[in-house]
Image 1 (tube, rainbow, N blue to C red):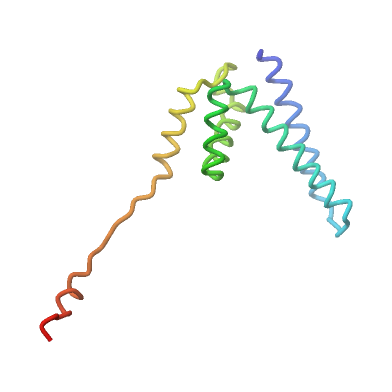
Image 2 (cartoon, rainbow, N blue to C red; image 1 turned 45 degrees about the vertical axis):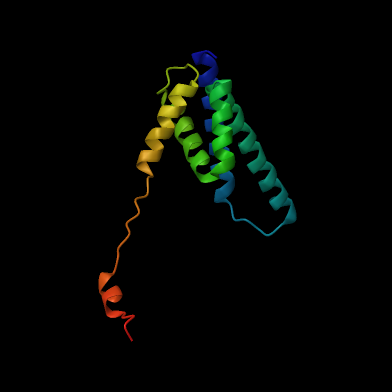
Amino acid sequence: MTDSELDAIRAKRLAELQQQQAGQSRPAGIDPNDRNSAEEQRQKQEDMRNTMLSSLLTQEARARLNTISLTKPEKGRMVEDIILQNARRGAFGGGKISEEQLIGLLEQVSKATEKTTKVNFDRRRAALDSDSD
């Protein structure tokens, strides 16, 4: 995919986001047609998101990201958001992201979101219990 194609996709996406923002600024009535159109809009955005990810990732990287999204949806979504943000900024240089690059990105995300657990033993309570009674 060339730089001009990526620029065209970015411009199209920007125009759609601007239309979406303009559509959200008007007061929303409770109309079933509005719900259907909102659902269609959400589906359209999801399809566009998947298309952009497919154009940015190699087949192996896309397969790995799909596997992660199945096991940990919130982590998969976070990584997808990072990839799309970096692509919009041009951080990838127009090339596709390989599986190795994706693994590096996943490691960075894992380090950033790593939870540390700490176990505290309350030894005083154990000392108060007596089995000699």
